[in-house]
Image 1 (tube, rainbow, N blue to C red):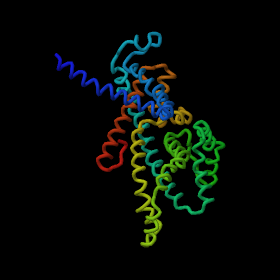
Image 2: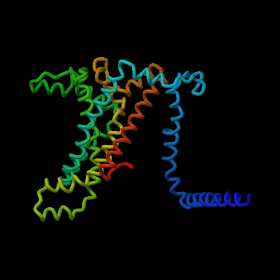
Image 3: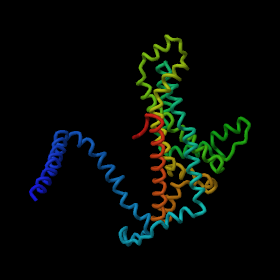
Image 4: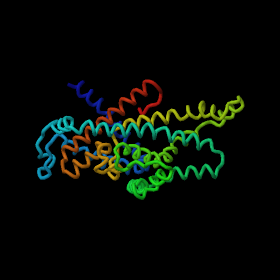
Length: 319
């Protein structure tokens, strides 16, 4: 009995001393903890707190009965969504827009960063960067209004330019074949310049001595970009590619909803817009929660799988 008591006390001593050491470190660095407290509470309240409501995806949620009082129905909402006639259409529209956006929008900031890095004229470089960065600060609502104004069949300036050249302008806003192109390229125009900041920051870390040695060896500018600048960007490119693939089904609904109409619904209806209509318009809270949970789980799986693949094939990964 004495040995047992002694062993228990011995195990408790390191635990207590560890707790004292933890609180001692917190008190010694209290300024740092206060500095990080707003971000901590932000994610705790707005990201982790709402996870309590995920359980309504497995219930027939009735607002008057509350979350705990609503009857449990298991995976019925998921089965209803998977067996619906619109499941594959929603999945295809979401994936096709994401892949289209990834194929067009991912390399353009890299090309812009490499081009800006090679510009030697200070005034022209600043002007070009400002022109490409500026669209990032335009709100989604204003951007959608500009798109509608520019592509209006009757008064759109871009439509008039196409007709002035001698071609027949297509119905950009109503033809389902053009919706994804309009959505993707307008998004690239808005975000490409801002995305170059990350790559320019990575290029700023290149040792000038490498370029000087390459010039002495007779390397051309293209060869220096290919063998010095691009390898420097590879780690950053890899991390951003993993994050982009991890949000492959995370197409936002704001801009699509503003450009959506009954004529282009065939190509514009994605998972996020369907969740919006089901949850907020039709008040099917449990059903929309189930769809949103499915969307988040697929994104998380893609993020983990792609990260593991990159981790095994290279030294660049998120974790």
